[in-house]
Amino acid sequence: MEAEKVKELKKVALKLRSNVLEMVGVGKAGHLGGSSSLAEITAVLYFHKMRLNPKDPKDPKRDRFLLSKGHAVLIQYAALVELGYFPREELKKVKTLEGLLQGHPDMKTPGIEAVTGSLGQGLSIANGMALALRLEKNPARVYVIMGDGELSEGQLWEAAMASANFKVDNLVGIVDYNRIQATGPIKEVFDTGDIPAKWKSFGWHVIEIDGHDIPQIAKALDEAETVKGKPTVIIAHTVKGKGFSFAENSAAYHNAALTEELYKQAQEELRKQGELL
Amino acid sequence: MMIKLETKSLREAYGLCLVELGKRNKNVVVLEADLGKSTRTVLFKEAFPDRFFEMGIAEQNMASTAAGFALAGKIPFYNSFAVFASGRAFDQIRNSICIPKLKVRICGSSCGLSDFGDGKTHQSVEDVAILRAIPNMTILSPADAVETVMMMEAMLDVDGPVYIRINRNDLPIVTPENEPYKIGKIWELRKGKDIAVFATGYMVKKALEAAEELSREGIEVRVLNVSTIKPLDTKAVISHSKGVKGIVTVEEHSVIGGLGSAIAEALRKEAHPPIEFIGIQDKFGTSAKNYEELLEAYGLTSKAIADAVRGMAGR
Ligand SMILES: Cc1ncc(C[n+]2csc(CCOP(=O)(O)OP(=O)(O)O)c2C)c(N)n1
Ligand SMILES: [Mg+2]
Image 1 (tube, each protein chain N blue to C red):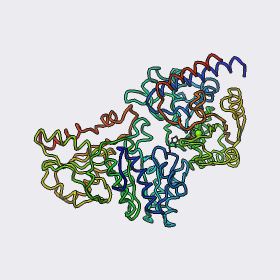
Image 2: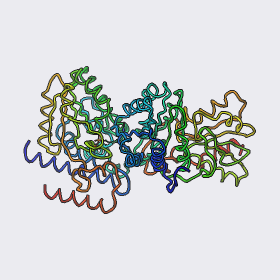
Image 3: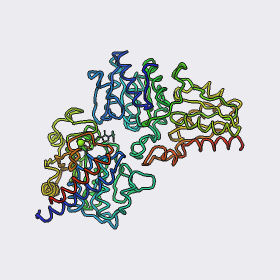
C-alpha cells in the first residue's frame, strides 16, 4: 500500500474516533473502548476494501459489514456518516427518541445490515448471508467483526463449525482481540485460552495482525480473498480505547460517561494525533 | 429487614442481600456473565470469591451450570440483564431447571425499559410472558429497593426456580418497611372503592400518583402491588374485583402475557368488571436519552393510568 494511501486512511481512522467521541458526548453512557479499538479496521474496510454504494444502501452487489459485537456500533455510525448514509445532525441525536441512531444496530439505519447487540449471533447471520450470496453467484463478500469477550458465547462456535462445514469462503471473520471484556481483562474475568489455535482447530484459515496497522489490515483482507474452500478469520491484536490515553487497555470505558474535562482532554489528544500525521 | 438500606437502587439492594444470604447459608453460590458491575454481583464476589463463578458471556451455559449446582445441593443465583437471563437461555431454563423444579434463582437485571439508552436488544418487554408460561416457575417483580430486600430474605425458602426482575434505576420507595412480607401476597397499598389498579414494579409508584390525583376528583382508586406475578394470589384478585367499577393493570412489559394477562386469566370464570391493560403495546423498546422520557413515549405514566381510570369510572 502506498504511503499516501496509508496516511489518508490514518486520517480517516482519526476522524472516525472523533465522530465516536462526539456521539459518546458528556455525561451519558457510551461504548468508547470497543468502538475505538476498531477505528483502523473500520477505516480500511469502509474506505478502501469494501465495494459500497452509499446512494443505494441495499444494492445487492454491496459487500456486507456486520458487527457481531453490536455494542460498538458507534464506530460503524462514524463511518456511515462520512460516506453520506445519513445526515451529520444524526450524530448529536444518537440514542434519543428523535434520532435515527439506536444504541445497538437497528435496521432502520441505512447501512446497517442486521440486528446485533445480543452477543454471539453475528457470525451465524453472516453465514446465512454468505451462503445466500453463493447460491445467487453474487460476488459480494461478508465481513463480520466479533469481540474477544464475545467469543465465550457458544453460538459463535456453532457458527464457526458451520462456516467450515459449508466451506464458506466469501466471508471473513475479524476478532477484535483487545484482551478486555466488559468487567475486566479476559485473562482474569473468563479466560478463553488460545484463540488462534481454537479457530485453527475449527477449520479456519487464521491470520494474525496488528489491528491498528493499516497496511497489515489491508494485506490480511487481500489474503483472505485468495483463500478458497475454507473460511478465514483475522485475529486483530488491538488496544481497547485506542487513541484515548485514559481509556486505553482499560475496562473502565467499556461503556461509561465522560466528564466535561475528560471530553476536552480526549478532543485535545485526537487533535495532537492529527498534527503528527 | 435483613440489611440496613441506604439506597434507592434495586440492584444495589439485590447485591447487598446476596452477600447477606451468602453469610447466612454457605450453599449460596453466584454465577455471573460479565455484567457483575451492573448487576452488583461484584459485592458477592468480593465477600465470597470461592463461591462466585464468572461464567463469561455465555448465558445458556450459565443457566444449565446453575442447574448442575442445584442438583448437587447448592442454591445458585445466576445473573444477567433480564433480556439475556430469560430469553437467551429459555430452553436451558425450561429443560435443565424447570422440569426438575430446581432451586435456581435467576436475576433479570436492567428489566423492562430501564436500560433506556441501549435500545430494543437490551430491553426486556416479554421476559415475564415467556417465563410465566413455564410450569414450576415463580416470578417476582419488586416495586422498590425495600421490597427487593424483603423478597431476597424470603427467597431461600421458596421451593423450585425463582425469577426476580430488577430495575436498573433508582426508584422512589413505596413499600411499607415494617409490614410482614410473604412471597405470593398482593399488597394493598391504597384503599379505594371505585376502581382497582393492579400494578407491578415501578408502575406501582405511577399508580399511587394517579390515585392521589384522582382522589381530588372524587374517584377512589385501590392500588394493589402484585409483586409476585406467579404464582398469582388468585383469591385476592377475585375478591378485589368485586364491587369495583373497573380494573386496570399496569406493567412495564408487553400487554401480551404479563401481569394483565395473568389477572384476566384469574378472573376468567368470574363475573367481573371491564379490565384495561396498560403496558407496552406489542412493540419492542427503543433508545432514549432518559428513563422517564422513554416511559412517557410508551404510555407508562400516571397520566395514562388516570385517563384509563376516568374512562372506567365514567368520567
Ligand atoms: C448476550 C449478551 N450478553 C451480555 C451482553 C452485555 N455486554 C455487552 S458488551 C459486553 C462485553 C463484550 O466484550 P468484548 O466482546 O471483548 O467486546 P469489546 O472489548 O470489543 O468491547 C457484554 C457482556 C450482551 N450485549 N449480549
Ligand atoms: Mg474485548
